[in-house]
Image (cartoon, rainbow, N blue to C red):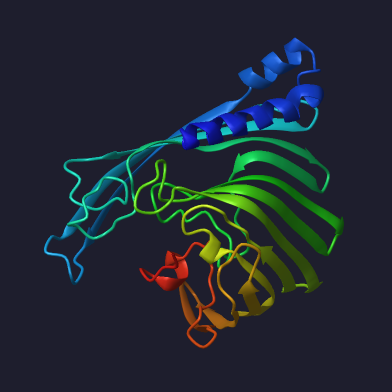
Length: 317
């Protein structure tokens, strides 16, 4: 029921947002926008095998994600987007999806079922983009905020997002998020499928010179349900990306502390440096990353990140 209410809330938000701006348009314009809309059907098969110490059974997850995406035509700079996923098991479910109760197997977080992945309305004019509803949000390399596309059920956000460029060299991206649709959905299981709360995501990118960019970011996350409060964090940081001929450099530093409803009391730091060297069709990459902790109280957390991209199978809560 909670998941259904969230879907209804997103659709209701779309209706309210469209009421004056879009529905006031002539019916012929609305009809044209629907008729000129484009749909896309995508299928992704995935197989994952896990042999984990402490489990007598080996997990084997054979799943298929069927995704339908639709984007309307434009009415006075407005468009509407929808995306629906259905994850099904191919063969028997010989894995713990976090919702199927098969705890004798290791976890492969690809639960089956239907999920409304996106339902949003977007307004875009010149260098300004405003999006309201259920949507995908990826910041930079997704180290702090991402869609976790590694899994079959992607992470999306119920949010209002504003992206604009007051200067040619400067881009500002702000989101107000009231719900996170996590990879463990569509239904609650061993881990919550959703995190309710009030969160603010801010990223500002400034081009210092051609090929050199500074990004400042601030993420203030406040979650209410299940294990959310322990992941309520305040994070601020700065990153640099630069290109020198065939060499690319990246560096990030950030500091984090408990925020709002967090039951913890800590402060931790994050450091990351990396370099890429492109040789013909080969790219060599080297990097170092450190997630600090505060005397065993808590470590630096990135609960909204695309974690597998950086930490493999080691995850936050």
